[in-house]
Every structure is written in structure tokens, then in C-alpha cells.
Amino acid sequence: MGSNWFAVRQELTPERRKFLAIASFLLPLLVWALVSYVPFIWHPMVKVTSPGDVEYFQVDMLVNKVTFEEETATMQEEGKQLPLGVPSNPIYLPPPHKVVEALYTAFTTPPVQRDGLWLHQSLWQSIQVIFWGFVISSLVGVPLGILAGTYSAVSRLFEPFIEFFRYLPAPAFGALAVAVLGIYDGPKIAIIVIGTFFQQVLIISNTTRKLDYSLLEAAMTLGTSRWKLLRHVVIPGVLPELYRDQRILLGWAWTYLIVAELIGTSSGITWFITQQARYEHFENVYAAILIIGIIGLGTDMVLARLGKRLFPWDKPANKE
Image (cartoon, rainbow, N blue to C red; front, side, top):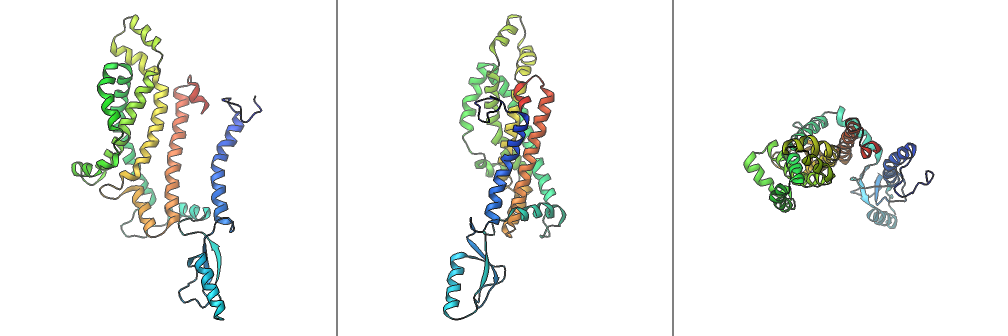
């Protein structure tokens, strides 16, 4: 079975896991490179290298391939100088090397706008919003989820409303958040709290219910108090799974960031992306999006490593 790559629910060797992890990133990069650098795959535009006698053509101008062919045919019929160009992709799809250059220059080149922020400054604003939103959500959501998963009365009291509220889109509360909390970071943090809190309670309560009931039964038979039951049986029993839940929920918090930062005053990485898109610096847009992914993945990898040290007895954690 060890030699079979597609064995059902059989763990792969460390070498194969590493190979497939690298391949999962290389495959999309390969597709992107093919689309960017191989002219016959998908190049719907033409980049003008010489305008010929076409009045409105300019060097480095991008025009639709059909338009370029029509203008070339017209110039040929009229006996005028033909325009020249090379196949190209639209401006919103920069090639990989341009995005890599943008990743470097975004940290080394001052902002074009006088009131603009450096990329690292925008990122720091976003990280603070994510941090406080997730911390506030967890301070209430984690204890409530554990209580709801342990005690049926707490579950029946809170979960029906939470089930209802989690279907309400968090951005819908944007105007209300601005009215109550002002136009700065307050409403942004509130949107992340709303977007993660209700999901957090339900996920953690479900995780808590998976704890082997015989452990609870044994503790209650021995006469433990409710507080000691939570402290010495429930929380230690669900801690590894709860930790993994929090890693997943932190990813959800990042997904709400872009919407949250559009509320009130524009700030953070969203403001940077919006400004770069407005000036058609799409390589900077892709660079900023990649940075978000790198920070998110990097954070998750650090937390996964930390989880192995915190819970060495937990087999799922040690397989990651």
C-alpha cells in the first residue's frame, strides 16, 4: 500500500507529502506562466510596437486583436504603413515576473500619492483590525461555545438565535456600525466580530459535543463540581480540536477584512489595493493579494507547528 499514491485514507510518506505540497503551488503558477508567456494559449490583445499610419495607435498601447487586424487590413488597402504589434494579455493580467517586481518595489518605492501609505503600513493597519476583531470574538465565543456544547440548557437558550443570526450578512451592519462606533477602526473590527462570532460559537459547541461522554459521566460519578468538570475534563479534552477550529476561524476573519475595510474611512490593505487598481497598477494589486495569502498561510503554518508542541499526543495535529 505504501507505493500507491492513491491509496484510500493511507498516509503518504513525508517525501511524497512534501512533493505534493510544493506541486500544489507550482501547478497554478505554471498555468499562470503559460497564459502569460505562451502567445498561442490566450493573448486576446495586441501590444503596439509601431503605430504605422494608424492615427490613434501609440507605442505600447494595448488594443483588441480584432481591432488591430481591422486597422491593419484598412492600412493595407490604402497602401499605407502597417502597424506592428505583439500578442499580449489585458492590463489586468500581469505576468508573474511583473508581480514579483511589484512585491519588491512596493516595499522600497515611496507611494505615488502624497497621502498614500507604504504597503507595510497598510498591512500593519489590517493586521491590527484582524487581531482585535478576532480576539474580541474569541473572548466571548470560545467560552460560550464550550458551555453550549456541555450544557443542554445553555445550548437551547443561545443556539436558536445564533443559528438565525449567522445567516445575516455581516456587511449589512456596516452603516449601523459606523453610526455607533464612528468612521475609524471601530466599525471594521465590529464587522469581523460579527462575521466570526456566531460561526465560532456553533463550531466550538459542536466540537465540545464530540468529547467522549463516558469521560464526563465518570467525572460526575466521582462527584466533581460543574466548574471542575469544565476545567479538568471538558477544556483539556477539547483543547486540540478547539485549537484547530480557531486556526480555521482565523482564516474566515481574513475573508471579512476586505469588506470591513471598505466601511468608514478607507484604510489598510484594501485602501492600497483600491488605489492601485484605480491607477491601473494591477501588478501591485496582485502583489498585495499575494501578501495577504502569504501572511495567512505563514500564520497558519506557525500555528500548526505550535500545535504539535502544545499537543504532542494529538495524532491529527502531528500529521499536518
